[in-house]
Length: 174
Image (cartoon, rainbow, N blue to C red; front, side, top):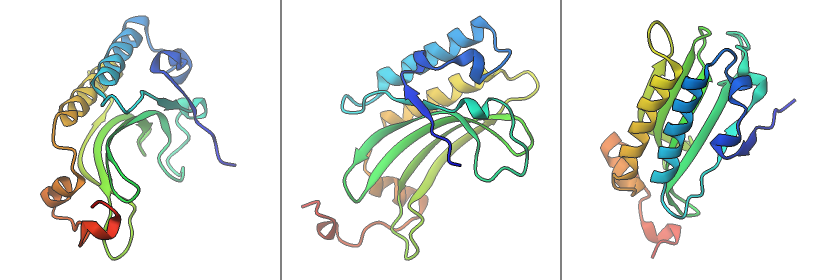
């Protein structure tokens, strides 16, 4: 059975259920960081967050895929054939530790279609003294920094040593 993620404003997410045991101060920090990210989005990219209550508890190391608890995508450049997206998510790692990841994704133009390549990534595990709020704030800072970087996916692919479309005219960009 495929689970369907709920969606809406970050404020609407049931933080206490998504992160059992989280305190009010930490929830306030998460909300403030999410609001800062939403304010930094391009005007054409309406804020939308997704969450899945089913993943609020670690599903086990043999789980297929990545059990995402809450996530959002910021579209920086989008056309029918190419894109640059910034992603932020809180998920479970294989060892049962929460992780906060931020990444820059671009369309793939390899001979074998991988759909998306992540050309920059920050992955923070929640353990020891690092709180979920601190990791979330750090990841949000990275995403906000990336919103002021060039959004052209060809530039990101070149920086990562990946191929770009051979001729932009074939993709309808002229």
